[in-house]
Length: 264
Length: 264
DNA sequence: AATGACATTTCATTATATGAAATGAAATGC
DNA sequence: GCATTTCATTTCATATAATGAAATGTCATT
Image (cartoon, rainbow over all chains, first blue to last red; front, side, top):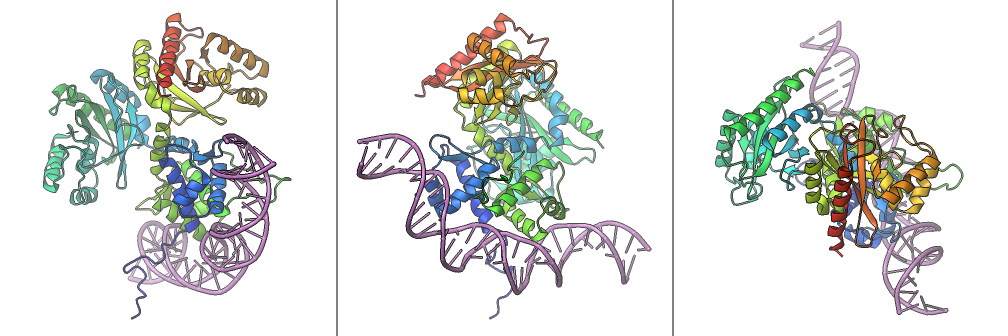
């Protein structure tokens, strides 16, 4: 019974480095904690010895990923993570290409404006410009959105890769609110409708009382590279938005797309 | 970006983990690159073997710190860094305590509003609310500011720890523009003036043509926990700001401080 | 002074990361 | 269509480098 098929069932050798794995778990742990954690606490949470964790924290600290409270000696996540996050955000062409247009969109509609991009199986907010009323939930840059339960997500399902759309539609669809679409059929129908009309909404699907109106941004190859949206209370952005609002959002998206075409 | 020097004379053993050190350097490298990098390229840049780097990248990828381009197999920084950065930002009490007040401040002044906090020897932007005119440079959350060359920085020098103020004033003072204060004496005099009047400006000191007007936010123990500011072109925020602008900014800062007192 | 709660260091032990070279896979050139 | 180049990936023997238990240092609090 020679079962020497390496990748048959389980994974005996994950082919990585366990030292690094432990250290990264420590970073994750520290980010999750809202208060600085003691060395013993971290060691216990990760089932490692204090000495090991200590050495890793020293190295992480040298790199700025972790910082130590001067008074208590406790450890917490380092602000370098914020700097790295911002550096990463800047890499998306759409962020710089869209700036002025997004300000105009906000001023014309009065609503908050957001920009999203999908990377692999993650949909992430890249930009938020606050409108007249304060929108805080699920809109900060760095936030992850659900493909099936957000207007941005529907844009990506409608105009992004078909593989992703199939995978998402067939996967489990979590209900964020009672209005979230959780049936595969209903989702595919909605996505088809979005593709036809060129814009998407998600009234009450992320947070009850909040609606979003999104449109796609394409690059010079007509490949989807981002989505923009206005976000606001349902009283300002109705489930069926004003034609004027739709015109503004779709028009902005088209102008940004045109701007991206020039970069060849 | 300078992480460490080998400490020529003092300590022969740096007391860390070299494996982790290498992996963190890889993350730094990938964040700095604007394009995805090949395995060989990373290995060469870090003077390590491809096998080693490969294993580290696999582990980093499992944790989301790194991602691999599907087509080319090249590696780039992962969006998890953005998510961690945002999670970290949320931890600052002042961010949630100040939200509504900042919106009001923006609407009253029409200018962009920023919030900063200092951690150890870093001054970092935590929040930006765009005004009527677009302000982009040195104002994004996650950006690091110079203590001696920003209105936020002067607030921290005036109302923060005296050790830091002494260290910064005696350290090298880089000139960002011709107007940046680079003399220790001039800086200390300016800081003293800021302490007396309760607000700070930095006209043309960060970027020529841009001015910032900042004020301190204290917690219930009267300890400085943040600074808020309006940022705009010098034509909107003159080197000597309007009394009305000063009243708005200082008033907002005081109301946020009052809000923080209730959290005991 | 004595205690306790913590971060830090030491040190022997071996588990584990390592690099050279082989392999596989996919473009590119002739 | 075959040879060549350029990658990422895997293998494997070896020694480096990470590890945990326990000792030490440090700073409060009693």
